[in-house]
Image 1 (cartoon, rainbow over the protein chains, first blue to last red):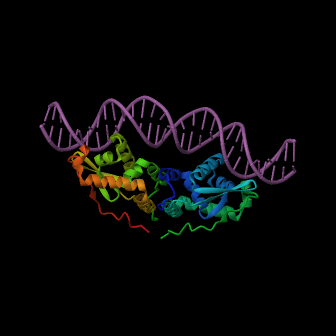
Image 2 (cartoon, rainbow over the protein chains, first blue to last red):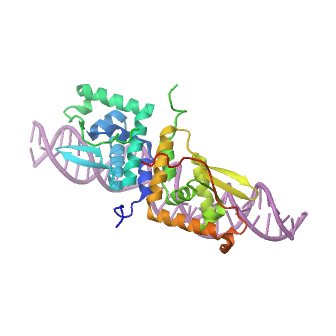
Image 3 (cartoon, protein in one colour):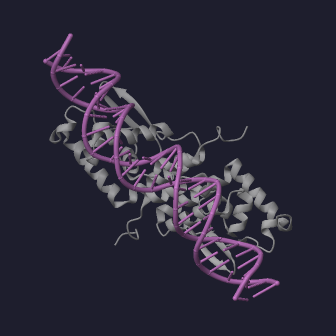
Length: 139
Length: 139
DNA sequence: TTTACATATCCGCCAATGCGAATATAATTT
DNA sequence: AAATTATATTCGCATTGGCGGATATGTAAA
């Protein structure tokens, strides 16, 4: 028995990161648990598209979902594999430095401050911080 | 002016890492400069296939090539973007921990010790270390 | 200048991906 | 039991990716 769980598919892991919409989704999640309608609103993309990319991330095990009534909450889940987790954390802190990603997060923050201004966010649960040391590697 | 060079395509960067043959190639390069015939021999894959994947990595800027007579030497080149470089280094040290990747490197080392035993390696230049702090991030 | 060798590129094929549009499912409200 | 809301899945299509096989290019040797 080694330190690895089983055989982790590195290629699939990186393929999951190889799409800009999925990177934007991960960036918005960060340390929060967010419901789908926020992704749709902030990224201004069709809902089926968002849903498909979330399904992709879920299938690979990078995010997990939790249902609460009609809403689905998504959050990042660190992969069981040590190497994958390290690369993912590094990637998340990289995302934080990208201008376009910062702009996405700024819009999210703004929307959270006044969700009543967005039709699609009426009554939707606000994003909620989850305790996870995402930035543990941030130099 | 920020710390970013221009707009770096993160998605393309990760797509380049999203293939097992390319990961194996990067693993074999590590801190060395290696010529194509070694890749073909060690990975036991058709030469056009190896060449195509090397071209892909070159196009994305993760590796660079140098010609020496009939031989082409490939090495890893750290991307100009800070975040990309960090993720790449982290990925390379992840590769070092994978059993299959260790096996590949072991075969490479063995072949380098007695290249005369491999028809395809007759007269081929041996891999040569390059000075690059690939492991600078190792914990 | 042939010939041989190392490497790169092209071609045709099939699988996978991303997308918009439509539709399905699941939970809630009326 | 509808009707509504939130989210997921399916379908058809265009694009891309990976592959094997054939071929082209580039360099050195004969």
